[in-house]
Length: 466
Ligand SMILES: Cc1ncc(COP(=O)(O)O)c(C=O)c1O
Picture 1 (tube, rainbow, N blue to C red):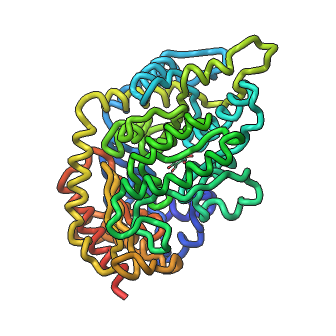
Picture 2: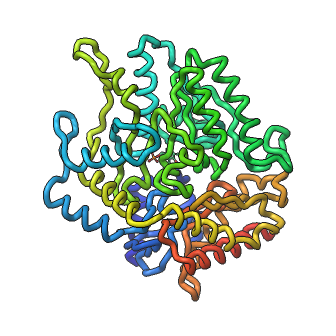
């Protein structure tokens, strides 16, 4: 009863994100609203004691499981000394130590760290910083950005503007600045004559796809401040994956054309792809990197945009020159959030998580082997701790399911319902349209992967039965 009451009160007052709230209404709601009581490790428990594997790491934030004892302990200690102080005119050990440690572990020499409190804001920082840099360098005409189709960089106006997914931006399109869009190097087999051809390797296709980026940079480099990409995996766009060669070519081309390279590693940073940062697969360093989500191990909101000393120096000067970067958020560098991030970095250093993640990722892939020949599975792909399964009318992906059929949602409901069954084990398999995916905390056990795989397979059979 307590749960039902919570749901009713939530529906009366809480505007839940990214949801048609009508879907939550009624006895047989299209998307049941789950009242959560507690969480531990990979498990979320509802108010009736039903348990669900958090297969999507609570929107990809929770990399080491919920309430990790080390993060909890450090947070409690921090709370005894300093809760919050503004970072303008003040500084504190957690913000300083975190900036130092991030500078050490990020690719290249990203020595300067600007904090924000969510991923979208980290992207706003990078976009503004890039244009402002060029302005301070006497090139105020560099006002444009190049982005990839199918990309997602957040939902504030700037971040949304450079996002290529129609679903998120269509309603707001008239309000947004106009980016230069380049076709994504997404290596899924495409059948519209433009994408990867049958038999073409990921590397060959990613190289081929780069030609359009090269052309765009040649034509618009003079008015472009930066190119922004999600390295290796376009997550919200449907876990679309591409070959690292694209990032290598992009780094070279950005240098040639005098354009910044912004790596949005908000979803893929901190080991998700099997390397600490996805850019490492290409051996490249961006001019700016945006971090959030896994940064605090999924405990508190925090984001960071790191850049090079050279970019920072363009903002440095006498007050009267008016060169300063004017960007702030009230909770910039919050001590508690920085402490959670420091604890997360401690855990990351405790063992070789990258080898672990590559191994566990492979386990996830083999656990769903039988789906490879499923008549309604177009592709199963995996990169580190990300596994994605595309559903389609046919096994070759020539005919997608109509979005209105909500096949992916059917799998999600199947995972939730399982918590009410005899096994009592449910899973949170919140899909991206008709793409079902696993992106669990790194600490998931083989047995739990087995549960997930069984639920996903049964859910897919049921979702595609008619
Ligand atoms: C690559 C990427 N960038 C930016 C964001 C936006 O982050 P936030 O939701 O914290 O604003 C997301 C969120 O999913 C993301 O995946």
